[in-house]
Structures are given as structure tokens and as C-alpha cells.
Image (cartoon, rainbow, N blue to C red; front, side):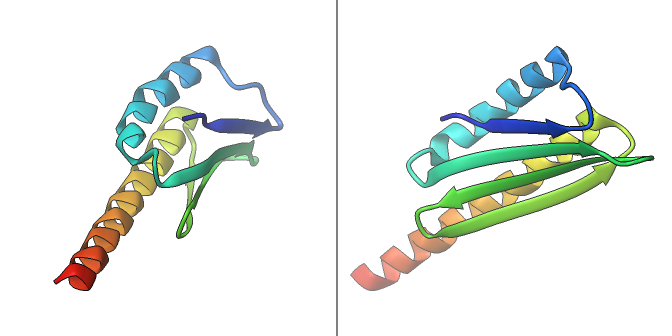
Length: 101
């Protein structure tokens, strides 16, 4: 699974790539659902804005976070996306169980 990262108005530090790589492992168990994963980073005057978008076979998941620290913004965005992805996966399991049952 690949995460596409784009940054506006600044260069992405190497340490951030290692943070994203560690977090990416948590998304691996959902790789059969994920079609595309994009993380967009930008810098406003006071805040870093981190936006994540995951295209799934059955929909789209979005998360957006503003934080003065880039690492915290990215970490929070990935956590929100993971939470939404887990809920979406549980709904799919429930739906398929109802069809069988």
C-alpha cells in the first residue's frame, strides 16, 4: 500500500516520512478495501493543515486537522482516518452477516 504525500508551501522533513511509515502499518490490514490513499499537507500563517483522503471500494473517508506542530497534525489525521476505516469495516462485516443470516 502506498500513501501519496503532497506538501504546499514547505518541504516535508525526513522524520515525518518515518512517522508516516510507522503509522502505515496499522492500515495494512485494510489494504484489500483501500484503492487510493492521499495525504495533503499545507502551512497557513499559524497552523499546519493535514488532510487525509482514502478512496475505498465502497466510498470515501476524509479527515482534516489543524495544529501548530506538523507531526501532531499528521498523527491526528492518520488516527482519525484509522478510526473511520475501522468503523466502516465493521459495518461491512455486519452487512454481510445480515445477508447470510
